[in-house]
Length: 110
Image 1 (cartoon, rainbow, N blue to C red):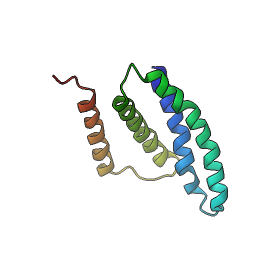
Image 2 (cartoon, one colour):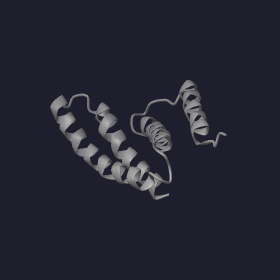
Image 3 (cartoon, helix red, strand yellow):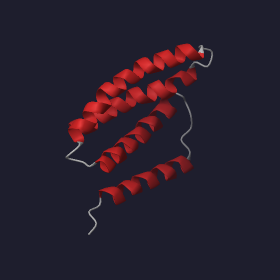
Image 4 (cartoon, rainbow, N blue to C red):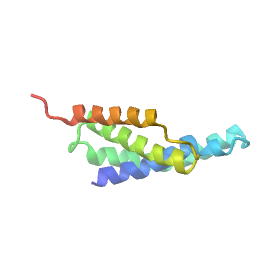
């Protein structure tokens, strides 16, 4: 559970670092990059321990899959609530396919 919580917090920072500046199109690009690097520092401070703690309980492919699903979930809320973009049906279907991929990665195959 600690791994999941750290990954969620990490992805919140990551999403703001990568996409938060889209609301501030008038800001100078160099400033946006500098601020994004500062925010990304905190993402790494959470992501690296999350992966270290989780590795062993999960393998690398499973950790990456968990991280991607968390990223899409956080991004979905971010794009709707912060950027005021519409969540379209085809986005949801695409995300469902990614979750379906997680089933195949986590399922114990003989």
